View (cartoon, rainbow, N blue to C red):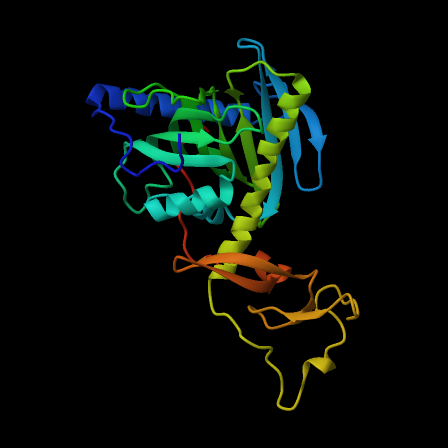
Length: 335
């Protein structure tokens, strides 16, 4: 099977009203289950720390009913909940492909089979649908695919707002397993985001609860799932890229008449002196002169074109969000 598939590849039959309502109810229940599963201490799952890394922590638990391992990664980053929701905008084909490129690097392809909420301005915030996803596997291992009920929904955890994207496997006509692919079964995976108790920060979580259809040594299973869990930190980079896309870009350092780059001897952020191996560069957002360690290269999608720019870490963390995608308070209780 060659990916990506043509846009009109899947020809799924129309669902009845009863079938649609059943899927919507199941999606709501899965959100409730995912939120409960994500509680690290005192919740419904006994999580054990598997890996404590610089940017995130990964925990593991056992689903004794099915004999499966479960994994969750957790990180806290600078940002707002509205900024995170913005990363997952997928109400157009272009946005779906862009989201796959940025936060779904292990995906070969993704397609919407059913959208139970016709596209409108809030469809990405509170939406239920059925999707097909094909996933890359390690070398010499067959690729996996899944047909999943996806629910994107806000929730409330006491006084804190949250938003999640839950996934659970379902069966639908018109999407049988492909030759050469192994159908993986999702028992409740997805992303969950919650406003941190620390102002200006967001807690990011990714849960993997999957039967990949094969028995492998535990160390291989842990290695593969840790790699998938580490994809969570790409969301932080997406948040920074989205901030940098907004506003104007400078083409040169703003300086007084007659001044030159020679007058800048220290990095504006780390204050280290410029040397042969610590060269000068300038931020195209704020115009400050910095070392290349503080002034990184970013790939931004601007009007459908990928543009490389250099911008400092401070500008990448500065929120410029002027719109609110989620209400300040939800009437919905913790689902």
